[in-house]
Image (cartoon, rainbow, N blue to C red):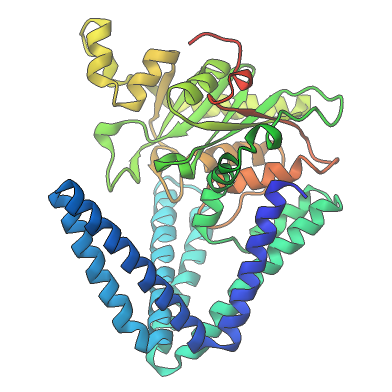
Length: 429
């Protein structure tokens, strides 16, 4: 059993057991969640207070005070455990409904055919939220039991996926992911969590070595899932490379970012693939998982046609680095800007969109992984686009398992990190 499969098996067991407790003992499970949250908040508050006293930082004192307020909130609401958990569940469903509604209206504004479908899913989440609010005081145990059923379903789904790929039932087994999706954080952070586990045990060299091609088909399309151990890197990035060129979509215009970088103009950049990989590892501190795919000539022609149509709706955009200053001064001024330092070190070319669904970047919808996955799905229907919030972690999971499937077109895997120079490409930055 691989590290990924072990990780999923543990999660499946946790989901299933937690779901059974929720289903059979709603009051006990709700109280356990609140007590656990209160204990963690208490420990965090004490740690922050100790740091504040030690370093005499006002901000640490304020953080400690805020954490203790939250601690008191958890302890006081422990007496109404099931009701409180039901309220949180209802608020969460309302949050997902709002996110999907925003995505739907963005798509409809750009005349995308997917807008109405997403709006229907948003309406379903809103209905669940209203159902939760309705039963918040009338019968909270019912909602707690429904949460238990959801957790059990997640556990069963993961077990089925592991079994299906272990016995090579085919990549189409991944379509079960379209029916439901795991909690977003666990999916998004999965690569980072696995990396952390391996690094702590010095297992990275043994566990992640480049895997030999499983057949003689040539690799002519590469997919990269980026990860890391801190900050935004934990939630990753996803890019594709074709004929030596990396294609990356994201939110790179810092001056136009809104709502804590969740919104912004959608920007596509191209860059020599191997230089970009080394730059990500050496200067940005990322770890990249590379998956080599084989696509036939018909699929190549379709991909090239799709890329031409995408670029036809764009115009060149330049990073702030192009301000008229001497090269060294210019870079020093804008080094904190990702687009500027990427352009300086790799020669990346950026493109903004005149119109279309990619004109606006939205972290919970039109993001990097959806851009890459829609291209992949367009040329290979076996690459299923999961419902809900699309994350790079979802595709890390997919490609790791598809690699084991002899009928899939995922041929090999490579691993790139600055901590192991032998995993980098032999190109200079």
